[in-house]
Amino acid sequence: MQRMALALGWRTWDVNIKNESHELIKTEAKAKRKAAGIEKAKETRKRNAKLKKEILIKLSKENIKEYKRYLAMSTKDKNEYIKKEIKKLNK
Image (cartoon, rainbow, N blue to C red; front, side):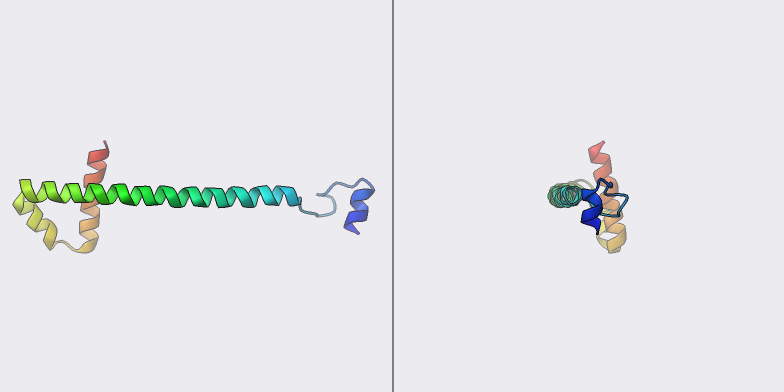
Protein backbone atom coordinates (compact mmCIF):
# COMPACT_ATOMS: atom_id res chain seq x y z
CA MET A 1 0.00 0.00 0.00
CA GLN A 2 2.76 2.42 0.89
CA ARG A 3 4.59 1.86 -2.38
CA MET A 4 1.39 2.44 -4.31
CA ALA A 5 0.80 5.68 -2.42
CA LEU A 6 4.33 6.81 -3.27
CA ALA A 7 3.77 5.93 -6.94
CA LEU A 8 0.60 8.03 -6.90
CA GLY A 9 2.55 11.05 -5.68
CA TRP A 10 2.20 10.99 -1.90
CA ARG A 11 5.14 12.17 0.21
CA THR A 12 7.08 9.70 2.33
CA TRP A 13 6.16 11.50 5.56
CA ASP A 14 2.49 11.37 4.62
CA VAL A 15 2.49 7.56 4.54
CA ASN A 16 5.00 7.05 7.41
CA ILE A 17 7.84 5.62 5.34
CA LYS A 18 11.39 6.12 6.51
CA ASN A 19 13.91 7.28 3.96
CA GLU A 20 16.41 4.41 3.69
CA SER A 21 19.21 6.53 2.24
CA HIS A 22 18.82 8.99 5.11
CA GLU A 23 18.95 6.14 7.63
CA LEU A 24 22.08 4.77 5.95
CA ILE A 25 23.79 8.15 6.12
CA LYS A 26 22.87 8.49 9.81
CA THR A 27 24.19 5.01 10.60
CA GLU A 28 27.48 5.62 8.81
CA ALA A 29 27.96 8.98 10.52
CA LYS A 30 27.24 7.44 13.91
CA ALA A 31 29.83 4.71 13.34
CA LYS A 32 32.37 7.30 12.18
CA ARG A 33 31.77 9.49 15.27
CA LYS A 34 32.11 6.47 17.54
CA ALA A 35 35.42 5.45 15.96
CA ALA A 36 36.72 9.02 16.24
CA GLY A 37 35.65 9.13 19.90
CA ILE A 38 37.47 5.88 20.63
CA GLU A 39 40.67 7.21 19.05
CA LYS A 40 40.39 10.49 20.93
CA ALA A 41 39.87 8.62 24.21
CA LYS A 42 42.97 6.50 23.55
CA GLU A 43 45.07 9.60 22.92
CA THR A 44 43.68 11.35 26.00
CA ARG A 45 44.36 8.36 28.26
CA LYS A 46 47.88 8.07 26.86
CA ARG A 47 48.56 11.79 27.37
CA ASN A 48 47.14 11.77 30.89
CA ALA A 49 49.18 8.70 31.86
CA LYS A 50 52.33 10.45 30.66
CA LEU A 51 51.43 13.62 32.58
CA LYS A 52 50.65 11.60 35.71
CA LYS A 53 54.04 9.92 35.52
CA GLU A 54 55.78 13.30 35.09
CA ILE A 55 53.85 14.80 38.02
CA LEU A 56 54.74 11.91 40.33
CA ILE A 57 58.42 11.99 39.35
CA LYS A 58 58.54 15.73 39.88
CA LEU A 59 56.70 15.42 43.19
CA SER A 60 58.95 12.64 44.50
CA LYS A 61 62.12 14.56 43.65
CA GLU A 62 61.10 18.03 44.82
CA ASN A 63 58.78 17.57 47.77
CA ILE A 64 59.16 14.37 49.77
CA LYS A 65 56.54 15.34 52.40
CA GLU A 66 53.93 16.06 49.73
CA TYR A 67 54.78 12.80 47.96
CA LYS A 68 54.34 10.81 51.20
CA ARG A 69 51.01 12.58 51.76
CA TYR A 70 50.02 11.61 48.22
CA LEU A 71 50.89 7.97 48.88
CA ALA A 72 48.73 7.96 52.01
CA MET A 73 45.67 9.29 50.13
CA SER A 74 42.76 7.14 49.06
CA THR A 75 42.48 6.25 45.38
CA LYS A 76 39.70 8.80 44.91
CA ASP A 77 41.78 11.57 46.48
CA LYS A 78 44.82 10.55 44.42
CA ASN A 79 42.79 10.81 41.21
CA GLU A 80 41.46 14.23 42.19
CA TYR A 81 44.97 15.41 43.04
CA ILE A 82 46.32 14.21 39.68
CA LYS A 83 43.42 15.81 37.76
CA LYS A 84 44.06 19.10 39.51
CA GLU A 85 47.77 18.95 38.68
CA ILE A 86 47.04 18.08 35.04
CA LYS A 87 44.75 21.09 34.78
CA LYS A 88 47.55 23.28 36.17
CA LEU A 89 49.97 21.92 33.57
CA ASN A 90 47.54 22.43 30.69
CA LYS A 91 46.95 26.10 31.50
